[in-house]
Picture 1 (cartoon, one colour):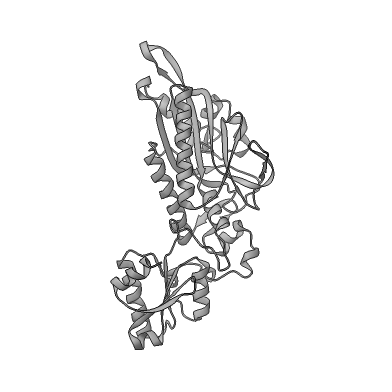
Picture 2: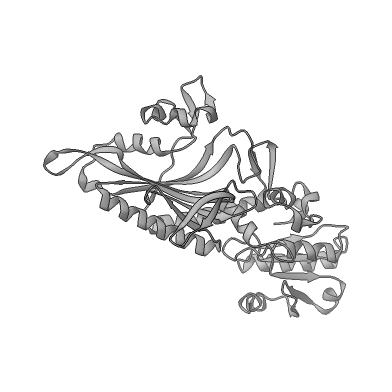
Length: 384
């Protein structure tokens, strides 16, 4: 990604007094997201890279665990929620379209039930485990950055199970998905049970949260403020579509609903990976793994060498940020790379042109002068 070709280049700078900025505001300061209208995030290229990485990890782990991906319409009939008695629960947050019958999807449990009910299910089909990653819409009164927005990205998952034992097996599978996702994202959350274990939330500590965690000798409990949910599941007694049991008996399935708040996961990553230089992104989701710093954008030899450096990094499948802006100092460009958590800075200036080399400075302070060669570049990345 070339900074000189980006919109809003004034955002490519280390925010003043950034350690004091709350995480939900830091997203905008970092150039990850904008809000053309309150509650409706517009992800800029670097923010979208981060979101895509989180989505990919969740998608991989959900698929590995046996959940199959679908894509449900973003417009629903209001009757779906009326049929389950939940229309009143969301009624003040509905976004209506085409009159008062159709709404933008606030949740997807009913849509999954409607999908499954359109087929003749037998006990041999079960369990059925599905998921989707898509936007949801709720007209909340006080949006707060991507942490609490009116349009937000969710991974919704559902299991349709024949009995209580199968339902709990699905829940255990989801718990393993959560553990794998959080391990790869390198975020920490506390598992909290309510309603005799039928409702489980995974809470992250954060100053923007509206619930909190207290500890007693036996279990965690919800109480107070300063934490927020990043994942959850709820196990319903029956509540799912009907199916044909053995000997053609008519039975009602058990339903498990599960989910990840994608934006909450992204928020947790930045909240939990701040250090003295900026955001030390986990390798699994890091938007950039290298930065090419061109010292003098107006000097042709330097630009040509920097271009070769950038192309070489792309050729070895690195993810470089090319800071080719004119009028910025080495300190400004290097500080920005450190702030974005980029582990390697490939610096090109007059001395590098004279010597036919590239200076590599690591985020931890180590540095070395290397030849512009793909094999040498690979050794730099491998020698972390």
